[in-house]
Image 1 (cartoon, one colour):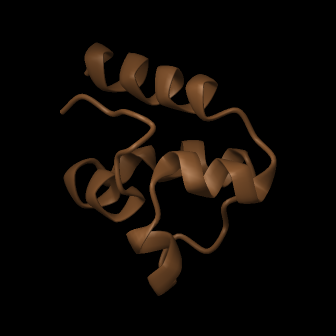
Image 2 (tube, helix red, strand yellow):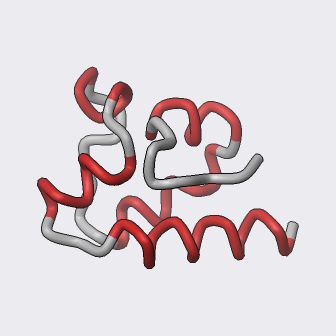
Length: 66
């Protein structure tokens, strides 16, 4: 699975639940709420004031190393 800024958080978590730690690290603690499940990574990062590119890179690196 290749993650992009347009990836929906719920889809990422369904496919790779172990990536939740990366969202939690940047303050996204509401991963189970309906809005988080339907938001893109880019949208959520804007709300939380974090860098979407850095998060996507970290998640993809993790997934590639599995």
